[in-house]
Amino acid sequence: MSAVLPVLATRLSAAAAAACGSSYADVDPELRSATKPQFGHYQSNLALRLGNALSQPPRDVAARLVAAVQLDDLCEPPTIAGPGFINLTLLPSALAKAVNEPQTFASNGQRVVVDYSQPNVAKQMHVGHLRSTVIGDALCNVLNHVGYQVLRQNHVGDWGTQYGMMIEQLLEEGLTAESLDLVGLQQLYERSRKHFDADSSFADLSRGRVVLLQSGDPATRAIWRHMVDVSLDDFEQVYALLGSALTRSDVVGESAYNDDLPRVVAELEQQRMLTESEGAMCAFMPGFVGRDGSPLPVIVRKSDGGFGYSATDLAAVRHRVGTLHADRIVYVVDHRQALHFDQIFTLARTAGWLPTTVPAEHVSFGTVLGPNGKPFKTRAGGTVKLVDLLDSAVARADALLAGRDGVDRAATARAVGIGAVKYADLSSDRGNDYVFDLDRMVAMTGNTGPYLQYAHARLTRLLSKAGTTGGEVTELQEPAEQRLALLLTGFAATVTQVAETLQPHKLCTYLYELASALSVFYEQCPVLSSVGATRASRIALCTATRQVLQDGLGLLGIQAPDAM
Image 1 (cartoon, rainbow, N blue to C red):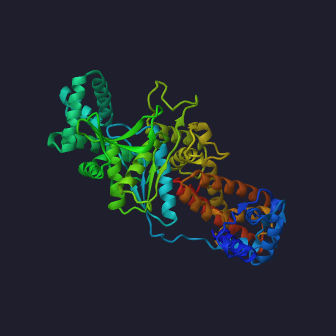
Image 2: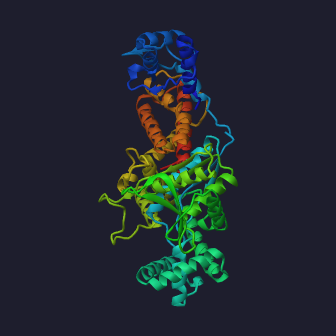
């Protein structure tokens, strides 16, 4: 809603300049939500920091700031607490105005490339792809909302040694590529992997096949192309079930950079950045060493003449900066790749392909765990297929909806089940592992997706009974409605914070706090039974809350059903 917090911050910064000197005009007052109701709505420790810098008592500095700040149109008279905290309480009229004037974001003129999902061709998507896809979608939505032009890039694994193995195995067995669906391709991969590991001559043939693939051999390329097409068809079905915005047009696989790989090596050689090591061309950069202290290489070209994924990632950086004109690059990849991306970004900057003006950020995330606290596996110890996991969530949600009237059960079960999985993933700090627990995920209470969806549905039902929506908030006399209005004013700031930090759990936390405040509002502030201006104002407050819940869930990639 209206950006009341930035206005407060600007006024306090101006007061700092007036009270302590112009050099403090740009100081950040670091406004935070008050920890207790008696401290008002916001607190600032600005006086403590200025007092330390000026070697003056913080309470004296706070008194000067309070005398200088111009907040009569927004706040009750500021108060000073403890060693010098400044407490601010917004006027009900200011809160109402902030709710009534939604903040919009204009284009910031910047383009961000977001690389996420990244499944491998010839393999079914599994639970390991869930986090990258869900987090990536949410971040794309948020970045687009705050004004970026977002370019989604699905960097699928469709290149390298495994395709040489599979093609050799297929030819040895006398099979045709057209006879295999994705399950058949995955089984072919498993057979070829065992063959590759057990037979050195087959391994040599496979490596040679990779070189043929990379050099454009027509027969090899035809088989590979079928593998890719079959895989992409299956990926599209999984994305549709998940409700992901990714489409085939967003797929830019490793193969897309093949023609640029020789140029990557040539330019690095021209800059004397490569060293031959056991026949491979490697970059050794200062600061990157193993546990034994030996230098860690970035292998750009392998000893057999093929190119590794480091070369592909370097080519991708060049393409995203030079061709896509990215102002910011975001990689949503699990935490195990932290060292790899650190090396790639460092090498790309050293080579001049990644300017210092273009931030490249690795959005790392933890592992999905089973109830035993170990990586989520099937009972047989295999990898859990993503489509099976999503189907189970939808089935669990469907069972909860049994007997409910006025609900499109199939559509709602899908929205609730998929939303529950997404919210559980997004609501925890992405750097942490989390346990996949369907019972907890689909619960209608607590910090869950269904709890937020139900809050939205309940508001929809209330507004339908009211027979009207919209209007303006004019009265905020009760603490519960003031609390709800205050939270509404923080939506834009929360979304901006997520766009800056790439931490979607902060939006989840905000929405849960909003829904919790709504529950208290229901208990303490009757809506339908109130009358006159109070009723109209509370209906407007409910309308605004419903919109923020819908928008917030939408940014997370979660549907907001009108009935549950």
